[in-house]
Image (cartoon, rainbow, N blue to C red):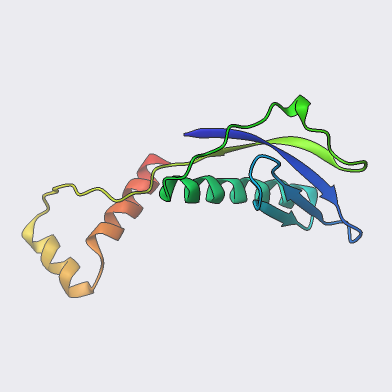
Length: 123
């Protein structure tokens, strides 16, 4: 699911940035550069929304950007985050016996190998 929230960027004395989300109290991020702050802001948003969803808490609606007035020296930017449902689901798969034997002998996790292979294939 896609979410877009306005974020307030505050430039610190050491030239780093602190990022807050007016609609998500407690969701705070920082970055040493503006690019890093943008990346960290998106990461924080994904984790925050994912946590709320996992805990079955209400995900607040984003305020319209024009309604948020940053303090002097701060600026507003929209941050987009795509949150994927990471809950595990059970699927039945068939593999040759020799493959299953080798997986067991190697100590690999069949689920992890399958997830990694699918992630690579779908990327």
